[in-house]
Image (cartoon, rainbow, N blue to C red; front, top):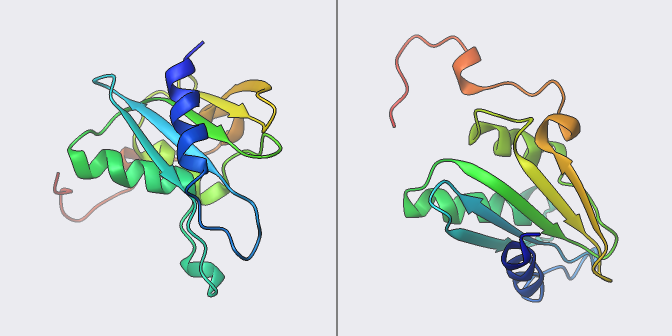
Length: 137
């Protein structure tokens, strides 16, 4: 069991800023080099400006130069799954959605394991989108 990944998500959840919903979320990603990147949700009175914990973790990972997600842990009060936007963002950083393990952990420590493919069965990859120019890396 990837205890370090869960511990990172649990720890960062304590720093979540959720004054509107009261729903604190912590997420931790393991990248292709084994490094862990964590993020907490940051709410805003303009709800569309809210940043989910999963996207905060992806942003930290990408900002460091990593590009591949190996695993994800999400800690909430009730084992909540990532939202649709977050699932599509996660899809951007894996070539194997069926192999991307996602651990959903509740406040009591109960763990549910799933995959990105199960949560986003019809997600699409960047390589499937036609372009007029090649993407910059």
